[in-house]
Structure formats: structure tokens, C-alpha cells
Length: 288
Image 1 (cartoon, rainbow, N blue to C red):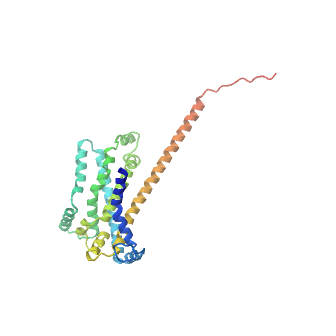
Image 2: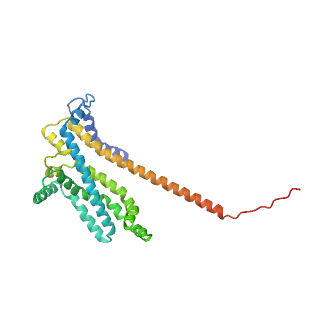
Image 3: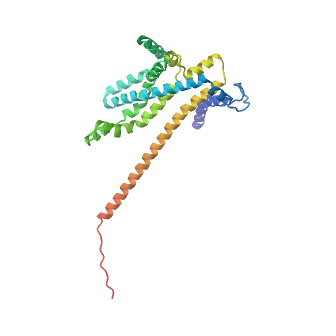
């Protein structure tokens, strides 16, 4: 029964994506069944659209800049939380994660008012700043589990052995936090690439891909919307696959290195045992 429930949940979760992908290859402009045939005409039309090309490029720029900025700021917050002990860590972590509960509409209006107060014109710069502010709490919340179980004595042991602060960070802290940081960066890229509500308030004349799709839907239900949606989905999926492949290769390299070290230690132990074992010299029997 639980397996049936699991498969029903998976089908319910991915059914809209499957339907959008199916109609993105529909040869007809109709968005209803029966399905008449497969065609790439909608992808050809959307890639030939200069507005789509510019919107896609703007979304990639904003998502990349927001991911880099959020990773730098969020990693700094994570390092600070690691060094804070006691209940103060819980309070600060809760304060950092609280903006997740804020509605996007409220955050967009607040950012619009703030940019107007400082005289900053709306552009991709304001969109990148807004996306960084929006995604930073998600980044810190993703690192929370790794921060809570981080053993600070490892850094102290490294410094006791003569490592500098930079060496202990590069050789101890960063390798431990790297998988969580990469996973949080993937989440930030996906959030920034698909963000619409905040972008509507803080963007100027430069449009992103979600804004372009939204403006197309306001006019009419165009089949090219399905193709544009699948392109966005494919880019997000590519980021996940690349990150997953890097995790897998890194894990495989670590396991191989660990197996090699264990094998070397076993060989060394065997050699030492052979070297320390007493040599029994048997007398040579004379031949009569």
C-alpha cells in the first residue's frame, strides 16, 4: 500500500512537467488532447525570438551573480556561526532564517522603496541585489545541519600542529563544508533563475525569462510558452546533474583514496610483522 502511495505521489508531482514537455513537442497549436504528432517548430520559434534570447541571457547573468554573492556572504555567516557557542547560535540562526517566511510581495515592495530612497535605478544590478537578499536565508538554512554538527576541535587540532588560520580553513573547514555549500549554491541558482514576484518590482527595462513567460501568458496562451518552460527546466536540471556528477566523482575519489591508504597500512603492518618475527635457523644436516 505504501508503494502505491509513493508512486501516486511521484506521478502527482511530475505530471505537470510531463504534460508541458509533451505539448512543447506538439505539431499542432492546440493545447488539448488528442495528441496529433511531434514537432520542433515551437523550439525553433522560441530560439529565433530575440526577446527570448535576451531574457534567457539576463536570467543566467542574474542567477550566476546572485549565486556567487550569496555563496560568499552565506559561507561567511556559516563560519561565524561555527565559532559561536551556546544559545546565541540558535538565536542568530533563527534570525537569519526568519526572512524565509516573508511574502515575496512584501519583500519586492520593500526593496522597491529602498532603491528609490537611495536613488538606485532599476536594472539587472537591482535584480541581482534583490535575488541575493531573497536567497541568502535559504542558503544559511541549508547549511544549518552541517553547522550544528561541525566539530570545532578539528580546527584547534590543526592549529596546535602548526597550521595557520588560512591553512586550517583550507585543509579542514572548507573540505567539510564544501558539499553543503555546493548544494546550497545549486538551490540559490534555481531560486534566482525562477524568481518572478520580486523581479517584477525591482527590474527595469531588462526582462528575465520568468517575466517574459508571464507577459506572454497575459496576452494569449501561446504554445511557445511550453518550449520556453522546458528550456528553463532543462537548464535547472543540467545544473543539478553537473553538481551530482561532481559529488559522485569526489565521493568515488575519496573512497578510492581511503581504500588505497587502508591497503598501504595493511601492507606496512605485514612487512613490520615479518621484519620483527624471529628468524629460525635450522642446522644443515651432514650427508653421510
